[in-house]
Image 1: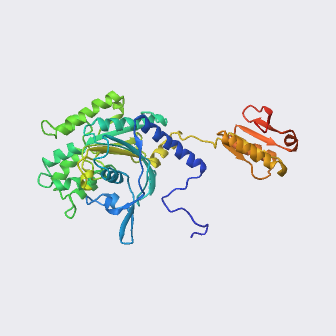
Image 2: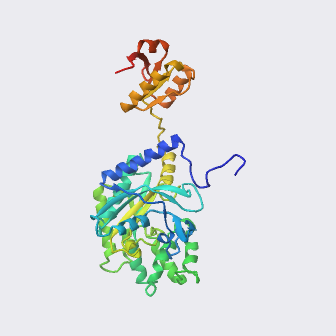
Image 3: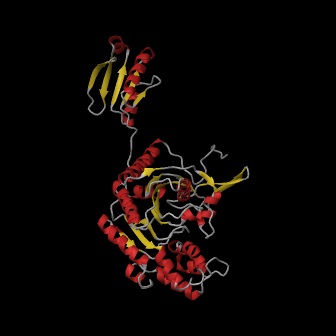
Length: 426
């Protein structure tokens, strides 16, 4: 224990009432956008079998697990929600009406190095579509991201979304450097996902590491780095074979995004591959246009995830949007609202003898659906009025000896300053 008493665990957050109101404001926008797209909300336990999250592609997320053994079971706090979602789908495979349109707002845990916009726990808005194999799913999900940005006041010049196809990258690599080593593709994506963070030289070192999972030659690594530099789809198309389905797929995606009205805020970026091994097709990430924060959201297609858990083949696509980065960006732009408590009425008995009448009045107003603060002690009237004004209360009901004797309360409207009397019984 520190000298000042117990503190929250480093990398976690306490939410005081004003901060929790801001968090719920954001969550309400998550729910509202998901509802407009006809998604249903789901949730799952925060604690899962650790094996659900452990994969062997060298992902950082595996090293960041909060995990422990208890009663001969290896358990972990979820670092992401998608594997839990896959477990839920698998549990009812065959009995679900497809396509599924599910969303969630889970709390996730990762023991990672903290930077601005990065905590060790965060909430994440997930939207996932299961059972739809075409890019109509990805287009719908990307549109939902932009509807959320619009809803919270982020203009299109504040956010850009980068899109790529891991299937397109894989197609090119398997025709070249990975022709005889397809198993190296997933760990290769984990490495090249770091290129914006650690730079091309460090990525090259990892790609050519003789003790690593990829083990490219220096020439092959240079080819990969050059391919990742493509920022136009036509440039990437030069690496694709004739009749490439992934290329046709991503072109169709851009056509659909144009119909949604968001194509101008989406750009192709060959270096966007996402660091999770289970992605199989279209991948995307959103960033603030000034480049001062980590990605706001990311997602894509993960058609084979259910099979890796022993379930039947089922196409799927989804994204996750973290609350920490989004809140940082909203704060930078002055878009986080200052939300008062928003009380409808404050009821105050000026003396203890009038408390029963004040209690009965407060209970009546609460049954009518009003949010009522019943003053519990006997502070000065000046303090009661100041607190009521600060809390955003609409009205103050005052009951003193004279009011109680006449069976009325003095009602003061704090916005207009007008004052009237109302009977205590109705």
